[in-house]
Image 1: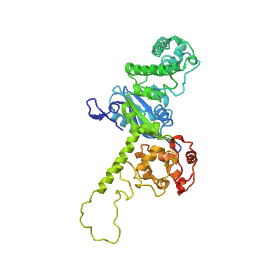
Image 2: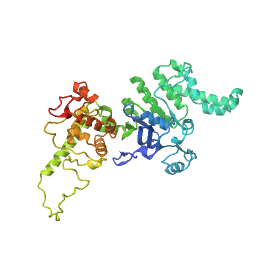
Image 3: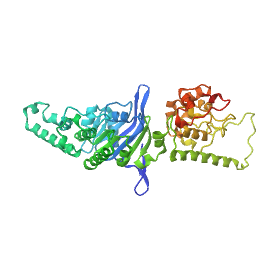
Image 4: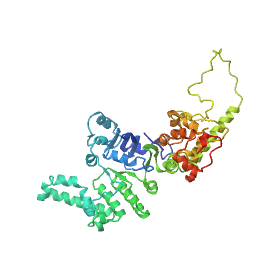
Length: 480
């Protein structure tokens, strides 16, 4: 689970968020019936860091938030929150082995969030959150919204309403402190002059800031923000950045945010985690993530209709072509004389299980990927190559990469089994996507000369980036 980053002196070592995490998400899995929304996800949130959780729509980001904050109980996995310094591994393991939800001590407390109800996660573990959709009390004033967030200490001070009715000194003191805290946060989000206005009357950007202020009134150690910049203009996004930096630097609060505004993410994030279809595809600092080809593919191009045409993806293809050329040259060299083989038994010599098949294109790092590389041919059949972009999920760039593997025909993809699908998915940097887009099923249909709904669109030219072309002559696999 640890991320290896470059230290300031240029040496490699564990990233800061793996050395001093405030939150550890370990092997988190969330299933809804047969749908796997989150699959074996692990990451750390560094103490005092701003950590961004990003990914395309439907990647599972909000599901992760719901698991961390107690709205969902994960199917599998552990979510450990630490109030003390260090990893506190022994304390976490002790709580895990027991039936306890947490262990509190002056030296440092640990909490297993997956075992705790949502209100206890907020009250004890000190985790607060906002939502994609604003959830203020519209009929209450801005000030009242911030007082509501402090109901726990106020209820205790009021002896659970009796002291408030009687106006005991302890309640009056707590009420005064709550008002002062509310006024402080109204000032930080620049809403002091709107303190007595109903929350519903505030501009959209002001409502977003008020939600963050309300969350901060609970004095969280971890603040989870679900798309805080959604709907904000550039000026408001800049103000949001400044507010989050202030919260982190002045109050020491760690921040975990979901955000689609890459300007916000790249400017303020210490650590970025990228999800795609519930699987982590990248984990590192902003510079590492924004140059990761897997991230570029997930956002820009491993898409059923879009062509990936960015330097990183082209570089991957060029590497494959170079590997193939190197392999060809090595084959052309004269072979060394080997000792004579033992007497033949009359049966063909068995090929080693891990050796490539004669028709397999040799990739020097093939063993780095799970499963097994599919067989390929140097050239397509005599009738020419099939238009692989007729398979939903294969754009022109992916077609070129498959061709580089020696995959030219629907019938080749139709023959793939699970090991080949896993290998190609890992090699193309989108594990699991081939199964979800049913490439093999589509290929079987197209190889029989039948059409799919998507292939009909390609044949009609309704998919502009797929560079539709006429089916090759004499091949049932190319017929529309």
